[in-house]
View 1 (cartoon, helix red, strand yellow):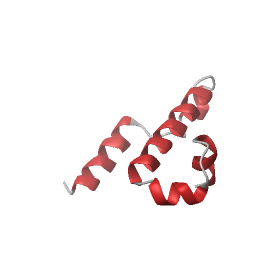
View 2 (cartoon, one colour):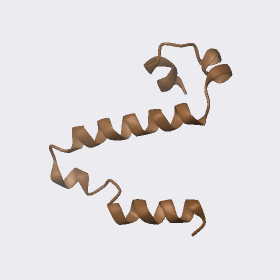
View 3 (tube, helix red, strand yellow):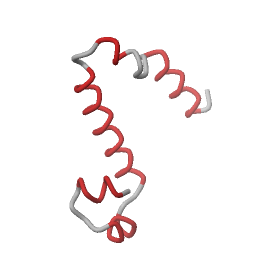
Amino acid sequence: MDAMAQRYSVLPSELLVKGDTFDITVMDVALSYQNYKEKGKDPEALQEMYGQEQLEEIMKRTRGE
């Protein structure tokens, strides 16, 4: 929450009142992409990230399939 408040220049109390799960999702995607770009220079580091098959499996479980 602190990182999100800093990133968007709001007080944590304002974030609690106005924020929602969509904001958390956007923050997670932005930080994951930033991490991906930084690790892209090191092929071994990219192995630690999710693969396409893992992401599809997570999506299926989330949808209840």
